[in-house]
Amino acid sequence: MSAPARINLRKTKVLAVDDNPQAMDILSQILLGFAVEQTCRCQDADDAQDKLKSIAFNLVIVDDQMPRMSGFDLIASIRRDPISRNHTVPIILAAGNPSQQLVVRARDCGANLVIAKPIVPGVLLATPTTDRTVASKRRRCRSVSPSAARRL
Image 1 (tube, helix red, strand yellow):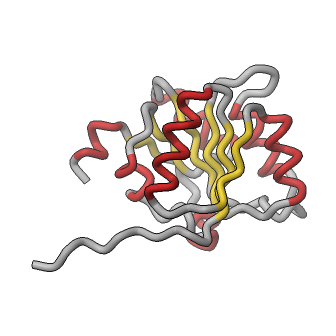
Image 2 (spheres, helix red, strand yellow; image 1 turned 120 degrees about the vertical axis):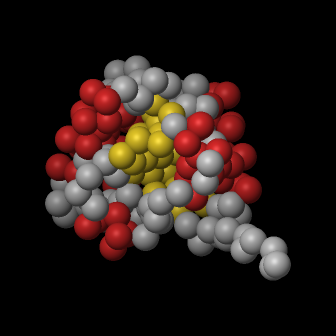
Image 3 (cartoon, rainbow, N blue to C red; image 1 turned 120 degrees about the horizontal axis):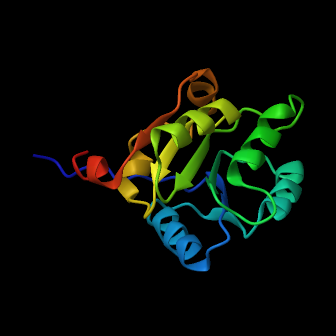
């Protein structure tokens, strides 16, 4: 039996948006474990919007609850601008308690995936979120809990 292939996302540009420093550190460590070298960390949606104007990302991971502008509002603003270089970027919404209503709201504003906090590495591997063509064709949004990720 051969060893499992290692995931290497070295060339992937990720925008991580979370106002909680501990959650941001956990997410950054997970991304480093996947060899992501280009992670842009933002503590609020305003800072993220500035970065989105100048950098083309391969993946955006957003917290649902932030001061001033929620993750939902940030996602909707990304999807509203059809000429933006990040208009079709795969977006993951991270939520502390992802209810069915939250998943529907996330889908409606343009998220590709909702994941439960605390974030588990297996959840990020469960979907092809770093492939722009796959993510842009996806019309549904799903939720993955940490317990479901352990079974992956």
